[in-house]
Image (cartoon, rainbow, N blue to C red; front, side, top):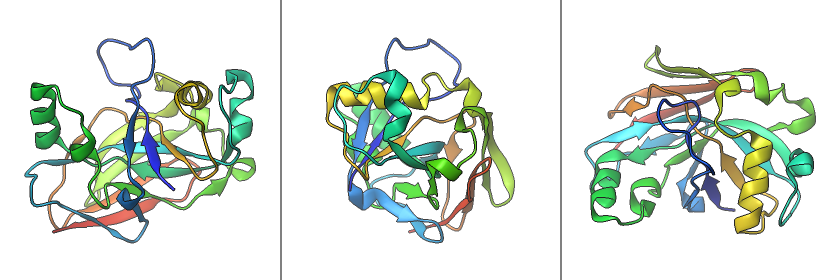
Length: 198
């Protein structure tokens, strides 16, 4: 299994014409109850809470109208980013793979089957750090819907069962530190909780 992560949801600024997609390796996955490990090369790792769509049916050039039929389930997730390394890569016009791809940089909560999940188009999404709310948004403000993301990504590469789409984050992205406890929630889905360590 591998993760591919889709762009920001609900941030201020210019609205892109199409999603910005980047990939994470399967070794970035860590389940709820695990830990995000801060990598030695970075001094500034940030959290980004996201709704995750789990692909259940393979597809290529999927029509938006039928895109959700390819989604098997949903979960809360975190896209962890070594922001200092990302900033340096941007300045050099290099890819972001290193900044996004460290082990444990894609925490994933319990997956709920799509048939049992709430309406993810209308759900609060939040992240707290040590009990303090850092991100508080709503999926209704996503720049691209889950259906649009599935359809778009399937024009780039064939989607396969088990692929994960992290669908973007609301405002409030910020740094984490060793010893922090992160709790990510998407309304109606089980919470994702991870510790941060070195």
